[in-house]
Amino acid sequence: MRKHKWMENIPLKIVSLVIGFLVWLLVVNIDNPTENRTFVVTGDRISLMNTQYVDSYNKMCLLDDERDPVRVTITGERKLLRRMTTSAIRLTADLQQAVSLDTSPVMVPITAVCDNVNPSNIKVNPQYMAIRLEDKLSQEYVVTASYGESRPGKGYEVGTQTVSPEKVKITGPKSLVSKIDKVTANVNVSGKTKDVSEDVTLVVTDRNQDTLSDAYLTIDNNGRATVTTKFWRVISGVRFSVSTLGEPAEGYHVERVTTVPDTVSVAGNEEAISALRNAEPRMVISGPVIDISGVSDDEEVKANMVNYMPENLRLSSGTSEDIYITFVILPENSHLYSLAGNEVDFQNLGNGLAASIDTDSLAIRVKAADTYKIEDFDVSDLKASIDLQGIGEGSSLLPVHIELPRGYTLLKEVEANVMVTEVSNQ
Image (cartoon, rainbow, N blue to C red; front, side, top):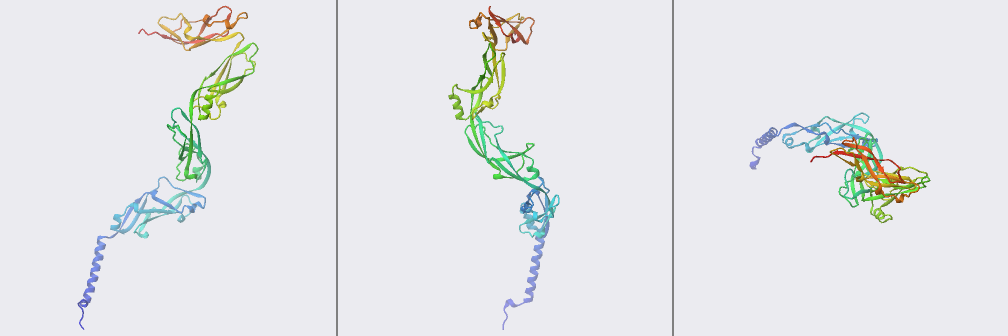
């Protein structure tokens, strides 16, 4: 039988194949050898696994803000290592593999994983990650709405703010939760005049008024709240009425009642503002009732206006809460007159000097004799003067000389603050 050609020289062909394979293997190993390469991965890329393991012990994990980098050494083919970057390396720390939970800090082994690389060819340094464990604490806190330094549009103020939910439960490490001071829902009201509801992120601050990071805090409602802000209109020229109880001493009467301030600005919702404008008397709020029983001299009373504000009305921001009420008490058949400051004569004023009184008018208390009536007194018959003999530049409190017609006397001496200035040659 005749042999086929391919069956000729079989041993020689086998030897050729073996030699070819050895040459290929040699070329591959020379061109793409196995080697080691070290990568530096930042510590913040370590992912914690099985955190529920420490939750079962009512503990929480705390990590340092700045964690040491991890050096990852990989053994592999040169071409593979040259294409590899640190982003391909995944670092994990499995809490179930912790050496012990009773140490401080707890040492958890670090594992590095990379696609197309056998785990046995990967080594890490350091091999362990230090983790602090703390007791877990949960507490409830009231949520406070705030608009900070922002201000509504002109003529408006923030009237009311409501928050939903009104309180939240915060869970976290005991060292953090125990120093929480307040939980705030901040909104910006700049330029706004219409009622608005906003969904905002809650801000947690400690007793030093520093904001706490929510990295280790779990807050109900995903740490968010809805703030509803209602805006109130501001109006000015509102007065406080004053009522009296009882009567002054016998032979005396209430001459005048004054308040400081005489008018204030208030803020309120539309219904309250409308009621104030349509009431009789208009733009008046009923103030305090003062007992003047048996009083024979001027009486000044301090009151807090907040105590008399109707519902849905309040003093505008920046307005003092105090009101000073003065009762001028005079004997019967007497009266309090106002004399214009520019009607006072200055006598013995030095050359080159000018004088003025720092008030628009002076209060003059006049009493009529028994045979005269105070109603017949004419203030134009009154003469007032100030002696400036020896008075130089500056401000001086000086007596005012009052001349009255026959039958009338001055109940109280009058003084005035006089400013003397040099007259410019120009």
